[in-house]
Amino acid sequence: MTSPKHDDTVKEISQLIWQHAVDRDWDHPEPRSLAISISLEASELLEHYQWSGEPVGDKEALGEELADVLIYAFQLAHVIGVDPADIIRDKLQKAAKKYPAERFKGLSSTEKSKVWLETKIQHRENKKTL
Ligand SMILES: [Mg+2]
Image (tube, rainbow, N blue to C red; front, side, top):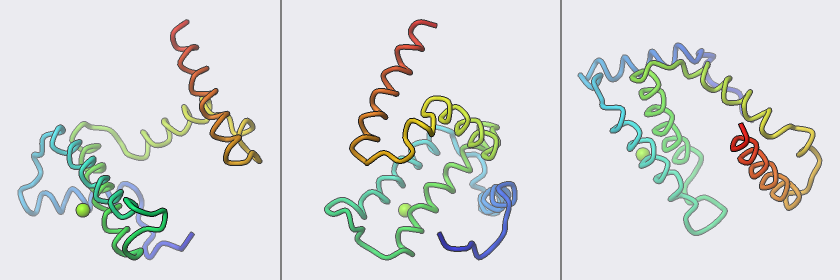
């Protein structure tokens, strides 16, 4: 992993993105439009991998598509009133319970896929009994 060029906090990035929207009077987007935009930009990112595991395009091109996804995600977080850092932490905590590290660490990729599916099914069945 490369070192970041800047040391911005999540809050600073969020403010930077929102200011960009405010400066252009783009600060009243519909949540639905932002959710659609996230999916569209994710598809643009996926297009780089459409025909091969090796992406078409360089790191800069991939980074631009990933940035589009993240920018819309930050905007949606702002509009619906959730803190990106909080929801990421909360989701990782839930995922850690759902997929305990000790069940996956050290397994081959085939074994991980099998355990992942078993864990997902088990989690779904546990939710039904609650
Ligand atoms: Mg794009």
